[in-house]
Image (cartoon, rainbow, N blue to C red):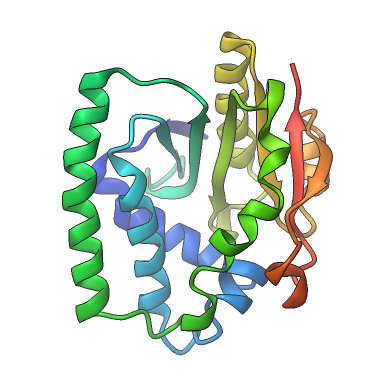
Length: 222
């Protein structure tokens, strides 16, 4: 069982792992990508574009878990250091790179649209976020947020997810700030064992209207 910082060459494998892990999940899978089984490659590319859109942001930290036998990527985590200030040089570098990457993603999305997706649900998370964003206020504004955690179904239960979560919790401890996560349905107990406690819900507004049941907003406070 090994985890390490991800490198640019891991992006495709990270996306494949995420697509496999979220194939049966209610939000990214069933609601946003109702045709994912018909167009599995498009579902993989969705995650690849998602990770690429954050790749050069210094606040985002990507880790991968490796199979102990083959050494291939079988788990992934994306931690976002929310509320942290960045240097002017980092902001300028990211600003330029971000525009280039955004242009590339827009162009590739136009040339190769996501056939697995329901276009009317593409922005459902952004539409819902203002309804619960105040949960990250006050002392919780500074936090390490677990944006994504995925383990390939063939390798679940081997402890890689635990190690990927612990990495971010250790970073939060070093800075004496809280950690946060939005739990998928049925994963609340997994996060609870690390000290995360539900403080609100994200399945409100459009997400609630479309029957999303998961979405516990959980914090591990200082």
